[in-house]
Image 1 (tube, rainbow, N blue to C red):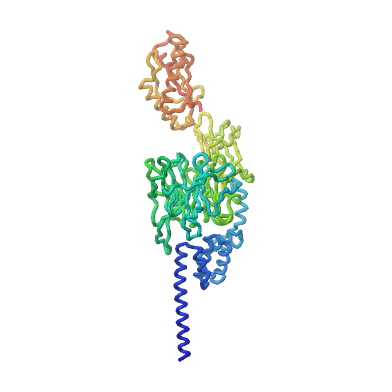
Image 2: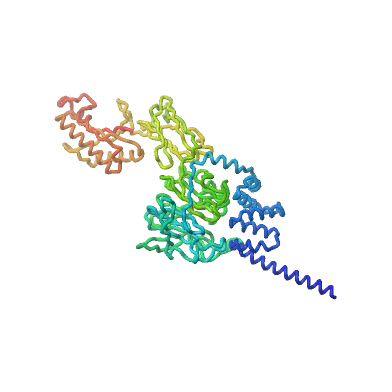
Length: 628
């Protein structure tokens, strides 16, 4: 009996311990699901190290950037449980290894994950030779020991950013830092933040606010705000993020409202505005993403309403996180990604917009990207200055940067210029190379071989234009690939105006003349009549169709009357025609008016009294000659 009682008592103790363990494990799992990773890790460390515990413990370390602990735990997980582990753990283990620059071991897990060989060191070496810029970073001085990130500029020298510096805020369960607020400050030339002050309580709530962007007129701000309540998302309960809009009225931020495409069941975050402020780019895990967070864009309508969000697609987005978009004044998209091959953690990438589509993203290289998270990149393209955020020092910090051309990247684009119809080489054509801002980089006049070549840089967007008198200018946009080479030589095939337009004919002198109905003026007048305006409107349409066309308006008279009078009235009539065209929207610099008087007759009627009225009438005309 004594033995039986001992056995029963032991079983009861074991059962009670097991129930307690199950109850405690349920509690720590709840913390993990709520993304309270620091608390979860502390409790998982006390539990029996089975597969479930090891997986969540390793992830808790990973998500809080305790990479050495994460690596040790992932390694124990893989040694103990091997092939039974879900493939996604290979990816996170690889990212943790890259975080400490153990690229060789990371590549083994990435090979397993992608089912293809990965050579990160070779990629990094190639990136050094192909990334378009090299960066010089300087940490922005401040007295905060907590995280600061997501700096944006507005006004002349004002900046706005997110910070966890308010110790009066409650701590965030994820990292035990105070909840984020938005701050404004002045940034000195020495990269020191002065006059730091929080935005008003209309902006800073009891929850997180981050990633502000302010319109050029300073009257509208978009920013992130985390929901104060959690909603069920898969197995976890998550506090989703929404993009809010605020308006500055009489010096106060007000009318704070969530944008209409936000939701309580998914997040929208990290707003960025195009140059014309008609398009917003943002990150979201809304239904339809390729996985985790993707980059989207949405139209901002004239009346302040929004269109339907559009996913930027698989060229930009992967099954992992793409976040923190920024669109530059040159329509270059910058964003951070953990899904594209990089140095570790979030890296900053760029993608050129070519013919309305974003091309393959390019890693910005090791002079700005670290083995940890680098994000919230913004740049003033015209002066090559900007900001980026990074946790490379152990906490989120703000960095200012300058950039210059990568000296390792010098390549060329080449081709010939020919007539589209006859294929004849066009000697004397002007070929011009533009950068992504529309600035002329180089130009050349081709010789008898019609050949041109320009030095270019890899991973940039360019436009090459061919022009020649009597031909329609031709533009070709292109983007250089990772190796810095244009995929094909660019042949510039120009079409002559005479081949393209029935109204354009060569006259006896070889000049290109636009044939229009005859323009009539009242006797001794230089006023554009209604019938003459209708004819000139045809020319307006033609010049709108060809925005680089330049035209000479030549007015001619017959030989009747005094020569001086005829010359003066022809000048007035040519000028009147020019002013009419300018009034219809044709740029003045594209027009030239010349009065020829009676100097260029089309027939023998060079003196008064020798021809019929009909013969003299032939010489009273306006001619429109294409100059360019």
